[in-house]
Amino acid sequence: MTPEEYKLLREEEIEQLAKQKLIAQLSLSENQVIPVQQDKQVRDLLYSKLGITTKKTPDFAISDGTEKSPSDLMLVEISEPTGGSYQKHGISAQIAQSMGNAPLSNGMDGNVQRVLLNPPSINIDEEITNKIRKAYSKYSFHRCEKNTPSINTGIVFCMGETQHENIKTPGDFHFNLSHGQFFNLVGTATRLLSGGSKGFQHAMRKNNKIFSFDFCDEFKFLGFVALFGSHSAEGYNFWLVNKRFLNAKSNICSVRINEMKRKQ
Image (cartoon, rainbow, N blue to C red; front, top):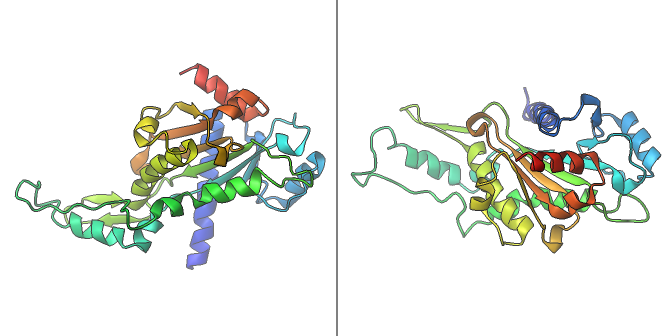
């Protein structure tokens, strides 16, 4: 399998996994999550019906059929944290080197090496949140010629069920780069969306719950960012939700997320 073929296969796997998690957590039916990127005919019919003129295509639209305007439709973009930033900046090599002593030492003998997963000299935060900025720009704006901003935009970061990048040592000690980047992304996304007023510790208290707050002005028309863990992060799911989105109640997603929040 070529790298290009693997990339496409992996993207398809993550999209389907994210779709099933959305269906399960939001109590949706299968036909309410529409693959607008994969199915051009379905996309064209849906876009034409609502007057959406943009040619940009997110992975899914979530619809209950009640939408009346371009801004009503919930558009969702899917992405996978792969640990690629750690490799690009040599952090994965530092992790591998530091883990060489892990099976033999508990660190009490001074045989320990610390690795910063988000060093100040490297702007990993900017890289791993670039998807948020891009998706927000593409799908909350310019849906049609009237250019009315839409808060019905969601972004999902979903880990795969199998290890994407994994460092191993002779003592069978593992570090999954996707796992590391996933939790880095949770903290970074929370800081970014809150304008720096909230961080990782606030998000962790809301694991598997709705964490709603007013998104900062830079992202005021973004509905939510969901982060779904799998494999080594199984059981960690985060919903960072814009209070404006919940108050709008303009889409089936905002209704279902409100229902989830009431049950907490």
